[in-house]
Amino acid sequence: MGPRKFFLASITTVSILLYMFLHASSELMAFPPEAAYGPAAESPDIAPLVLSPGAPPRVFDIDSYGASAGGDATKAFLGAWKDACNSSDDPSVLLVPAGKSYLLMPLSFTGPCRATSISVVIQGTVEAPSNRSVWLDGDLPDRWITFEDIDNLRVTGGGTINGNGQEWWINSCKVNKSMRCVPGPTALFFRSCNHLVVDDLEVRDSMQMHVVIAYCWKVLVSRLFVTAPGWSPNTDGIHVSNSREVSIIDSTITTGDDCISIVSGSEFVRATGIFCGPGHGISIGSLGANKSRAHVSDVLVEKATLVGTTNGVRIKTWQGGEGYAERITFRDIRMFNVTNPIIIDQNYCDSKKPCSEQESAVAISNIRYSQIHGTSSSKIAVNFNCSSAVHCDGIVMQDVSLVGKGSYLACSSLNARVIEVGFNSPYCSATM
Image (cartoon, rainbow, N blue to C red):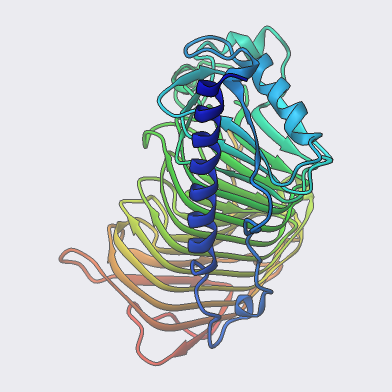
């Protein structure tokens, strides 16, 4: 290596060290203090990954593996990942340089890795192919970028992940009823990754869901900017499935579907400091589709702001399912011009055919709404539409104040046992 290359490599290593150290330090201070009450407040703290003061990281720059701006960089990414994953040096860093844009075909970064901690530092832009025939003609998986079976992984860098999903949206059966329904790929998919940090990224215009956390444990998602047009179908911002001890903090999500969706198998999930809108709000579910058994518990959503969303905080379950959704707290939430600010729907039906009444349902219990203030664009600001087979039980309303524009707001409560603490508006009947 010549003097010039050695100098540039040294500068790169020092800049990455500084970036990771500063952001690791900020993450230590990012977790809100444990709540004084609420079931999800008892969830264990998630320890963020902190750069140790030992040897400098070994940097694997994708440009050194043949990547060039604007060209297909898939082979370079896989080559850099193979060496970073198998490196005996800790920490190990895969670098996507700043100021450049790289085309990336569908690919998987898989472990387990020899490196005990590994970072993917995206400082530039990663672009998906805009032509959806790449997936349809190639029989490719319904994911674009997948990280699987990797422990102590950090994905960060301040760069952009662009799904270029416009062609998927305009050909969606939800936009064009004459089109065949074809599920689109998820932009960023994490599966079976423990002690995971996803921090300081822009994820935009995904074909379908933007970020999925599945079968993971101890996860910190922070400072994400997730964006897609409000009309883009099924573009959930952050989707959590079958995962435990997940924190989503200080993120802005503006999409065409749920800003955050938490589905079956998820426990001890905390979302705090979230800006949501447009979109469909923050949802638990849907749960129990196709008569399946589902369970979600110990969820805390707090310090959120929702603007112009079609729902506020929602729990949605299909008839005929089994299982439970319990110990869920929504608190300290501001809403502005939100339709359906507070809603539980045990009769959810996202189907072209009407859903017939069933004799079973996912049980919903121990749900708390506290310090929720703002404006509703619908007259029914609080709607508990619960199953006649399995009633909603233990719903607590405390310091809820929602107002409308020149009209009196109402609460609709069906088959729900509601406990009112203090003054709430609108008021919900405590009887079923």
